[in-house]
Image 1 (cartoon, rainbow, N blue to C red):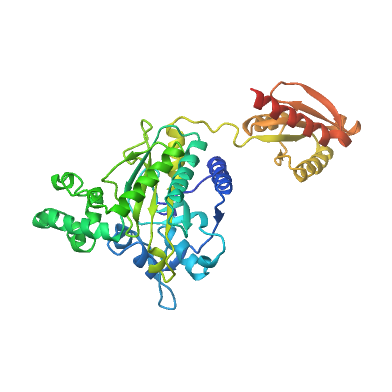
Image 2: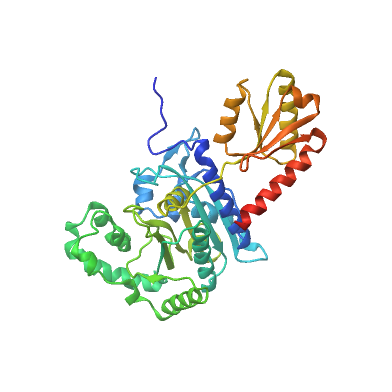
Length: 432
């Protein structure tokens, strides 16, 4: 039986995981600097969590969720996104009672959506999410957006575009909803069945339709910015002012609509404008979700956040031709010639690893030439050769593969010598 990986999923092999680890470490360090703390939630939740928070008119709920009945006949769903779970945990564990607000969280892990596989888009994908819950200050909106931009910039991306919009408060959206219904209703039969179903429930979602995006009525649809009340307009102006203070460049797009029902006020997307990146340019998206905590049973606690795909980040890095050199370098490759030397090599390799020096050795009893080729393939910085002659002298031959220089080093000073050599090499690389 020829069993392969399920459609829409992928195996990330050791040759690629080094890239993931670099990106994940960059993310964790950036979140630490911004003082966001990690939260880990279950991979599956009660289905009602997503229908109530994400919205039953969204594509995610209607078409993309992996939902199943467990043995207790409970409806459970593999999480399609992370905000709902984070907010559920916020409410369940009464994090709104923490003395320090807002509560600033991040999470990184697999999400699941049944959608057509495309470049950088999978049915199981890894998502980073940022949530700041407990503040209605427009300055926190700017902080969250700046954090997202900082992550991409630290990853070496330069060809980025930030687009922002305001979805307004409840009053503004009610007025805009009425205008949208009046605009689309006379011709709604020309739209897809999804749009027809959304007309009365959530006409704003019609503007996000991929099927009818080229319908002329889309171009002439009432803009939400024209229906912002004074409070919503003032809030949006403050967000833009803070972004200007932070020197975060942005464009205002009145047609930007996020695909989840819980968004209000600030909405934003970050896109790659690198040549050849692909038709789908969005890297990250997010916005404010005042009211979501109340929807899930908590007290009034405004929040804002964003989500980004790690897979698409890696694609964007490659699109800008950023290299991944030296991600999997090895400090030392230990070569043993003969069975007696092999026993010493096992001891030395273990000792080096115990002192945080990455070390590898041969376990196939190959000849020296083959072992040297392995050291080159693994990008080893040094080779440590042990044979009968070296054993007799209680020493090992240490060779610098970058210069070809080699020296005989006694076993009792080998660790110190290697640490000094590695430090020197690192300083030279920094100076270069």
